[in-house]
Image (cartoon, rainbow, N blue to C red; front, top):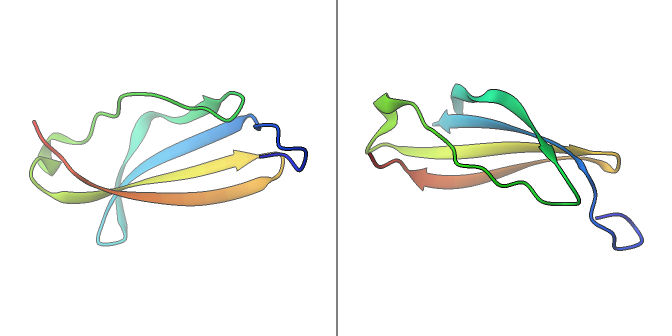
Length: 76
């Protein structure tokens, strides 16, 4: 968020990690964020079904960048 409270635009890069290691990147790897919102369906690698992965999102805006992590269990 901007210092005025307004949502920011920028980009987000999505990576799939296991044990801290990047296994793959979403395709396309970089997505636009418009007025603070990004939505999409992620397709994980087929070999990841049943494995505990972490979706790592690197968000970049004019105010800086932040890396967010979400643990997920991949299903078919």
